[in-house]
Length: 307
Length: 284
Figure (spheres, one colour):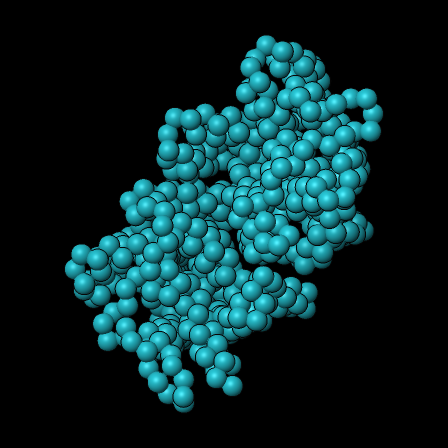
C-alpha cells in the first residue's frame, strides 16, 4: 500500500461519495449507506485477518451484539445516539475481551472453528431468548435517535452523510493504527510469531489488543446498521454475516484495508441486484463464493501474498 | 427418577448422532487442517435423499444405499476439485466450503421446499418399548446401538489396520508420513469420503428425530464443532467423549432451562478452552 498513489485515489473516492447521493434515487442512497457500513465491518475484520493473520469466523458477533444492545437502549432507555453507541461499544468490548481470552492461543483453522462456535452460541442465545431479543422475529420499530445537536439524521440522505462521516473518521483511525509502530508489530506477528517473541514483544498482548480493536470497530458498524435498518434480527449476528465479511476481505485483498471497502461494495451491490432478478439468490451467492476463491484467492488489490 | 432416566437415554441417543458427525469433522480437520463447513450440508442432503426414497419406495435399505453412494461422491468431488487446490490455506478452504453450504442448501430448498420434515422410522423400530417402568421410543435405542457399533468399528479400523495407522501417521506428523512414502493425496480423499459417509449416516439416522429443514446444516455443524473443540482435534476418543458430554448437557439443558439451554454447551466449551486449549484428548 503506497501512500503516494493512494492519497489522490482516496480524495477522488470521498468526492464521489459526496456528490453521487445527490444524483441518484433514494434507493441507491440507501444501498450506499449499507455499503459504507459493511465496508467498516470488513475493515475491522481485516485488522484480524490481514494484519495479524487471525482468520475469524465469528466476527458477526461483534456486529450483532452491539446492534441488539443499541436497539434495546434506544427503545427502553434513551433516544440519544451517543448513549446507544456507548452502550453498544461497551457490550461488544466486554464480549470481545471475554472471547479474546478464550481464542488467543489458537491459530489457523482452529481459530476459525473456535470463533465460529463462540459466535454461533451467541446467535443461538439471541434466537432462543425470546423475551429480550424477540427470537426469530427480532426487534422492530427502532427509530432514528437524536444526536443532541441541531442535526437531524431522520432522512435517508442525512443519515447517509452521518454514516459517511463516522465511517471516514473510523477508517482514518484504523489507517493510523495500522501505520503506527503497533500496526507494524502486528504485521511482524503475522509473519513470524517466534521472531517477535525473541525481539521481546509481548505477542499475546498485541494480538489481544488487535482482537479488541477489531471488535470495537465492528461494534460501531453494527450500531450504525441497526439505526439504518430500524430492525435487528438473528441474521445480523450469524455465520452467514461472518462468512460474508471474510469474503469481502478476501475479494478486496486481505491486509490492504482499502481492499475490504472495495470488497464490501461489490458484495453488497451484487447481493441487492441478484435478489431482484432471481429467487435462487442464495445459490448464486454460493457460486460467487466459489468463483471468488478460485479466481481471486489473493484479492483484487492482492497486496499480501500468502507466505 | 423416571425423568432423569428418560432424559439420559434421550441425551445418549443425541450424543451418538453427534459422534457420527464430529468423528468425520474431527478426522478431516486433524488430517487436512480443513474446517469443512459443508459437513452439516452432507447431513442435510442425506436426510432429504432418504426422505424422498422412503416416500416412494418404503425401502429403508434402498434409502441407505443411495444416500451412502451419492453423498460421499459429492464429498470427494468437492475435496478433489476444489479443496485440494488450496492445501493448508485455511481461509480459501473455509470460504469454499461455505459456498457449498449455500449451493447444497439452496438446491435442497428448491427440490424439497422449506417446511420442516421428519423421516419416517423404519418398520421394526417405529414403536415404543417399555422397560423399568419407562416408555421409550425404540428408534432411539437403534441410534445408540448403531453409534456404538460405528465407534468400535472406527476404533478397530484406526488402531488395528494398516490404512488406519497411515491415517494416524498423517494426523500426527504429515511431513514424516510423506517422507516414508505414504500416499497422502489418496489418504486425504479417502478420509474425506469416510467423513462424508459418516455425515450421510447421521442424516439418515437423525432424520426421524432431529428432522430436516433449511438451516439444520448450520445447527448441526455448530454442535459438531463444539464437540471437536471439547474433545480435541483429530482424536476419535475425543470425539466420542466430547459427544457424550455435549449430547447429555444439551438434552438436560433443553429440558430444564429452555430459553438458556445453549449455555449448557457453551459453559463446558469455555472451561475447556481456558484450561486445556487443545481439548480433552488433543495434542498440545
